[in-house]
Amino acid sequence: MAQDALQPYQLVRSLQLIQDRIAGGDHAALPMQAKLLEMIDARMRNADAEDFKEPKNFRALLVYGMSGGNPVTVAAAASRAITDPQSLVIAKGVVAYLSGRPAEAIEMLKPIDPMGVPADLGAFLALVKGSLLATDDPAAALNLLDEARLLSPGTLVEEAALRRSVGIAAAQGDAARFALASTQYVASYLYSPYASQFADAFVSGVITLHMAISQDKIADITSMMDPEREKVIYLRIARRAAIDGMTELSAFASAKAELGRNGNGGRDDPRTQLYSSLSTMTSANVDEVRAKLGKIDRGKLSQGDRDLLDAAQAVAGEVMAPVKAPANAETAPTIVARGDGAKSATEASADPASADLPPVEGAMPEQAAVAVSDPPVAPSDQAKDTPPAASPPPVPQPAQASAETLAAAPAPTGAAPVVKASAPAKPDMQDPIDAAVTSTRRQLDQIDQLLGAAPK
Image (cartoon, rainbow, N blue to C red; front, side):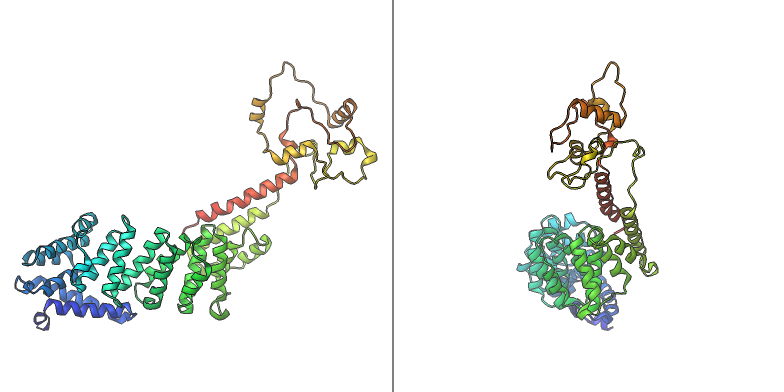
C-alpha cells in the first residue's frame, strides 16, 4: 500500500539517498538499494499516463533507468507517457544505452545539453554521455564527466564520474588530470564498494604514465589511503612493473610495500620478496637474488605469482650457468685479450725472449680486434664470401704457420702482427672472453621474454 501511495519521483529520490550513502562507504545500504530498485520497477510498470503528466515523475523514470533500471520497464512506461519531445528522445536513448546499443544511444543523446535540462536529470545524462564518448572522443567525455560532478557533487554520480575520469586521463596520457582525479577520488570515495574498479584504473594509469608522473606524486596519493590499501596498491604496481620490465618503478613500489607506513611493512610477505627480486635481477648480485628466490614460500603465492617465481628462477639459473667452451678449443689458436696490451699465442711462442716483458700500451692483435667488433661468421656465409680455388693449399700446423709468417715478414718492434688478407676467418678464432660476454648478454635478454610470458 505504501509503495502504491508513493509517487515515482519520491521512490527515486529515496534510491538516490541510499546510493549516496553507498558512495560514502556504507556497504550495509547495498541490500536496501536492491530492494528499492525492485519496488521502483513494480511502481513504474503500474504507472499510467496520468502519473507521467507530472514532469518530475517522468524525469524520475529516466533517472531510474540510468541508475541501473530495467530497460523493458523504461520502454514500456515511456510508451504510455505524454510528455515533451525532448524527454521522449532521452527515454529512447536511455533504452538503447541499457540494451547495449551504444552507437544508437549516442546518436540520440548527442544533441542534448546536460546543462540545459533540470539538474537531477542533467547529472545522470552527462555521466551516460561521458561514458559513451570515452573511446571516440575522450576530451569531450572528460568535459561531460566534469559537468556531471558539477551538477551532483558528493553523490554516487560524482563517484562514478571521478572513477571513469581516472581511466580516460591515463589513456590520453594526461598525467596532471590523472593525478588530480585520483587525489579527489581517494579523498572522498576510497571506501566506496566500487573502489576496486578505481584501484584497477589507478594501477594501470601509473604503469602507462610511469615516464610522466613522478614517484613523489604517487606517494602523495597513496599516503591518503589506509596502510593496508596502500600496501596492496604498491604490490600491484610492483608486479605489473616487473612484468613490463620497468625495473626502477618496480623497485620503488616493492620498497614501499616492504617498508609500509612508518617502516612497519611486510618484509615477510612473499609477494614483496618476489617483486623486489625481479626488480634487481639485472643489477644486483645474481647469487643473492637466486638465494632470496629460493627462500620464498610458494604456498603463500597465487598461481600467477608461482609462475612468475618459476620464470625468475629460470632466468637466474641461466645467468649463473657456465659458458660452454668450443668443441675444438684444444687445436684452435687462442687469442687472449686482456686490456690494451694483449698478445697472440703465436707471438709468445715465436719470441721466448720477450715473454716476460710488459705489454706494449695501445697494441692489440688484429685478430682480437676483429673478434671483438664483428660478429662471428657462419660457415655457410663464409663459404659464400670466399672465392673458389682450383686446388686448396695444405693447411699448415699452428707452429709451422707462425714460423713461416715471422720468417717471411718480420714485424717491426711494437707493431701488431699482420694477417694476410687471403687468410680465411675461422669461427673458432673468436676470443673466449668475448664469447662469454656475448653469451651472458644473451641470457640477460631472456629476462624480459620470460617475464612477459608469465600471466598478468
